[in-house]
Length: 495
Image (cartoon, rainbow, N blue to C red; front, side):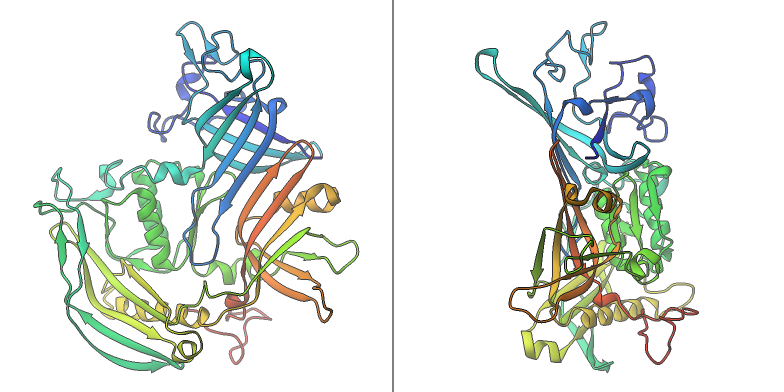
């Protein structure tokens, strides 16, 4: 069995002579301090009893959540007890323990002695200790951890780096929420879908009597550049980013949101995805990634329980429900200014899929996104982007689909085939799932995207669960100069 190699970076000024370069979130400086490697991490693998990790999201269209890890350690020698002044992580010179929250942690797994895979990279939230009665029996220390999303969710976007913020200079922050107003509208049809445009005269409720709102970004900035601008404002390190250029231009954003909220708003406007990968990098995937990246365009692994010698899973969950039915999609354009705060601008586009509504009833998806009215002299840019986004969502989420929702593997069942799979797969990898069902008939086979990766590890067993979404929605789009997907009379056009 491949045992995970656990390395913990302890607090500065506690262990070793190079503590000054180590980073603790909200204390260290990203541009100056380091997450640390080599001697800065302390290997505690031999004390590990169990590990559980989870990253990803439950379903398509959800925002990716904060990744988590829980590690249970053998603490019978009190080495992880912060009150133990004789422990290996206690600095007696300054009387401070290195067993503290908010410090970086990484979990690695090594196969065959030289193939190392990241499993989790984040920060320690806290330590919980359990002791046997009367000082005898067992003792454990449990570490709970979160990835970068937790840290980014605690920082207000307008605070970390003033050079990235456009503001009128006031130190008072305005809190504003949009309220409903009157509207007029018209309708048309596009590809069998009804498009309704409504002009809103909604206003803004101001929760304080201040007159300025800090904003971040400039109108017309592409989504990838905006992501980098926000991460720069939070001093997030450049070597822990994997950012697509993006295709959608944005309006300025309200910087009273947290850094994570700003980033997720950009991803929603792009119709892309934002998540933290297993190595700790913040990833921004634009909306074309699922139809253009090789690992998402074509299936790169097949899990087939009907074939002898195949990569077999031990459990499959199949879903057929209404969670991803949206047949009324409304996209409003939001603008933010220092003088007026947030407000709706221009028209709200409403796309209604009448056929889907007749089958499943009306199911609405409403979005308010920072889309500018004009970009590079094109006064129709904002309306066009809103319309195309609404059309796209109303078409691919009009009907339910029978789909594998998850597959679970026990790696010890076939170490040579399954360990590389459970350790090497990434979010948005496209895989093929095939299995037989009781009652006979044809086996069920579907292509899916991996949306969530969870590991439960003990010395005796490594269990991995992949949460899945259907790849059917993103199949058959036109790709120029591609032999299979470059057929003008066959493949679909993406917006």
